[in-house]
Amino acid sequence: VLKPGVLWQLDKKSGSQKLIALSEIENPEIYSKVYADSQGGLWLFSGKSGLVYYRKNPETSWNKLLMSSLTKGISNRVLEILDDESGHIWIGTDHNGLFIYDLINETLTNLLEDQGKKTSISSNNVVCLYRDDNGVMWIGHNKKGLSYYHKSFNSIVNVDHPECRDVSVILEDSKGNI
Image (cartoon, one colour):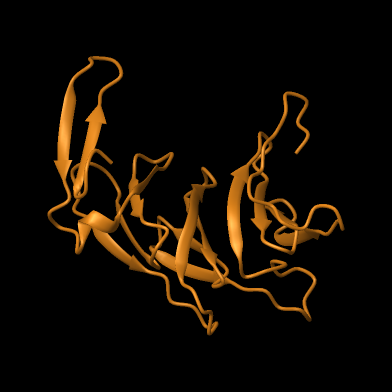
């Protein structure tokens, strides 16, 4: 984001530069975070609201994606966006769980904590997301550790360690350790 309401685009190969006005977007000045997905899409969010704008490619217009959840969370802020490189965009929120947007079907699924179900995410507070080299999606929570998912086992697995409760960033070393 170059300045409120304007994105700056640089072509790494040619060096050409382009300004993209966010004229189609309501209150463009609040959007300070940008995510580029593996399919060429662009996602705008602010970390201050539950509203996300996206466009599938430079030729399409911006679409509004409203994160509405069944929870009565006190906050509906989008904190993190990451794609799984399989056509799904993962969207972490503050107290409203994890949303997964299917790019092909244009559907939105909300995964929530369910204390009676071991295969649910461990917390509705999703602070960070990470996709490792094996395609495992890691979910960092505030006060509830880690959750992870891989399509081969088709469920969420939670990792709870007393010394690793607040997870604000997830990294992988050269040996594949998280």
